[in-house]
Amino acid sequence: MSEHAAHSEAQSVGLRERRRQTTRRELAAAALELFERQGLHGTTTDDIARLAGISPRTFFRYAETKEHAIFLGDDGFEDFLSQIATAIRGGTRPVDAIEAAQIALLRGFDAESPDRQREMLRVRRLIISEPSLLSLALAADAAKGESLLEVLTTEAPDLGELEARALVAALTATMRLAFDEWVRRAEAGETASVHALHEQIQRSLVGHFSQRASG
Image 1: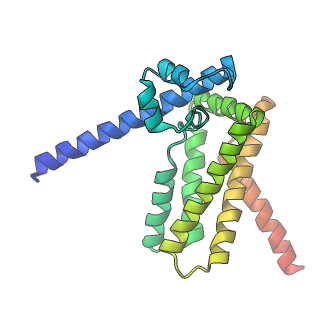
Image 2 (image 1 turned 120 degrees about the vertical axis):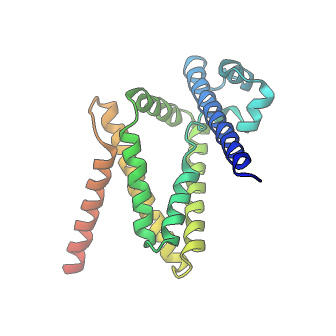
Image 3 (image 1 turned 180 degrees about the horizontal axis):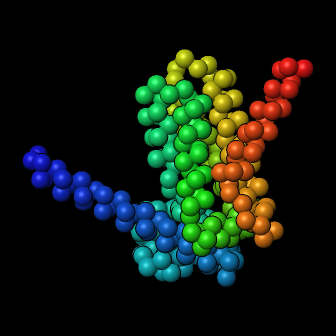
C-alpha cells in the first residue's frame, strides 16, 4: 500500500470512528430525553431511534436494549485501558499507570462543558430511580474492573492475582467515591472539581494508613 493510500485509509477509519461516536452520543441523549419525558417503560427502542435520526435496525448495532442506550455516551474506556497498558509496557509501575490514566480522565471531566456535566447528573438521577438501569450500571462497573484486571495480569505478570485485584478495587473505589461526592455537591448546588476531590480522598487514605503503620 502506497503512503497516499495508507493516509487515505487512516482518514477513512478516523471518519468512521467519529461518526460512530457521534451516533452513540446521539442515541444516549435521545434515550435520556425520552426516559425523562415518557418514563423508561413508556419508551421503546423505535422511539429512541426515531429521535436520534437512525433506523431501528441501526439502533441494535449499538445497543442490546433501550436500557443500554443511555450508557452509550460513555465510550472512552478502551482508550483508558490502552493508556494504562502502554504505560506499563514502557516501564511505569502499574499503580502509577492507573493513577495517571485516572487523573487524565478526571481532569477531562472537569474541563467538560456545564451542559455535559448536567447531562451526567440527569443520567445519575435516572439510574438511581430505575432498578433496571442501576443493575446495568453496576454490571458495567464490574465488567470494567475485570477488564482492568486483565490488563494488569497481562502487562504486569509479576503481580499476584490477589495483589492485582486489591489494586484494582482500591483505585477504582477512590475514583467512584470522588464522582459520588461530586454528584452530591452538584445536587446541593455546590461547584467542585472531581479531580480535587479525588486527591483529597487519596491524601486522607494515605494519612490514615500512615498513622496505622506508625502506631
